[in-house]
Image 1 (cartoon, rainbow, N blue to C red):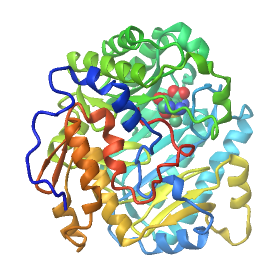
Image 2 (tube, rainbow, N blue to C red):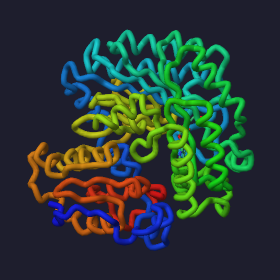
Image 3 (tube, rainbow, N blue to C red):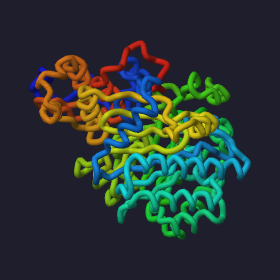
Image 4 (cartoon, helix red, strand yellow):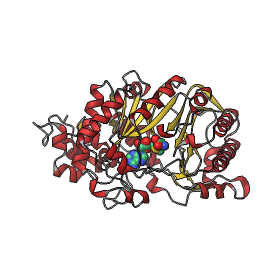
Length: 475
Ligand SMILES: C[S@@+](CC[C@H](N)C(=O)[O-])C[C@H]1O[C@@H](n2cnc3c(N)ncnc32)[C@H](O)[C@@H]1O
């Protein structure tokens, strides 16, 4: 499978210099700095087509084994203001009636899903994302959560999580979230430097962030996450380090540290960012390294590609135990193998394949209004046995930074040499110091962590080298 049986040790090209400086060499950046998926699924959303639709989603929901725990994702695309960097499916909807009407559609879709699954299915994880879910009127959020609890059996200890924008947290929301059983909140911060914020169209003071964290804790929300981004216009190494230090001092339980995904061909609002102020690959790598150093000194553990957690946090414990998972929301401890996405653009994952709902709120509402109470699915992809094998390798690398190709192949009854094609590229990664190879086991080194997507991409059968406009830069 991997031809070399040597245990790679001192990396040839990195010997004698610190990993970041070595990794920032133009040669390495040109070889590993291409555009790659974030591998929150395999196949990735780039493989979705209209050949998969409501009929497939209907059959896959009906085939979910009884007793299998589900993960529910509810998408609210609305925001009070649009950030220029945002790559997510978002829109401004100011009319409270429009927001409430969208909530009614979520309730209707949940009912359609439950009709197909059967009553009382166990749910281990409920995630609200967006956009900004708190744009829903409080009564609407309450009604949707009551519907979830009526149609499904939300397990004791289930994670119930929501994304927040600290600038727009309605006064009645903290107590509401506590009363509805939410136990995790993720706050968008990105960067605290006013110049970066101005360029991004998102002004958010340190006090707003601190206040939001305090209000969540006062409401009994047990776990608070913060999102940061590097690679934004005008960001510097010192600046992102200062943001990371200020945020770490607020003691969030976890942080997500995303590399800015510049995809103006997909997300038109990003053309309004000053492109000439965007940091290049070497600067991005140095910014990432500074944030990493600051967070480690503050006591956080690096998890997977881009997450940090306190050592006692469930995410860190799952990483230690090898039980960390990755899905469309990023890293999770959720063991559910079936993810049901509800709302505009929401993605669902089944053993048989992946489906995505109509993207915009209008297209979603139109599909929901169609005949026959069908599911509002616009596209998707079927998974082959080969896809499931490769998905397991990619998820193992992205979560554990380790994959035993022999063990995974055996689990899928695949040939022992099924990944022989990857051997030359793996040898190259080993020579660059980004992986070690031990028999059939790949281990990603700390120097290789920023290049994790490049390692995973070796097992992506759909990737073509010319494929530069479907994903953002990997570094
Ligand atoms: C779906 S957004 C919701 C955030 C929330 N509405 C807010 O405004 O704080 C979740 C996170 O995605 C990340 N994100 C959005 N666009 C991104 C991009 N183009 N590149 C990298 N990360 C991005 C940001 O860190 C953001 O906090």
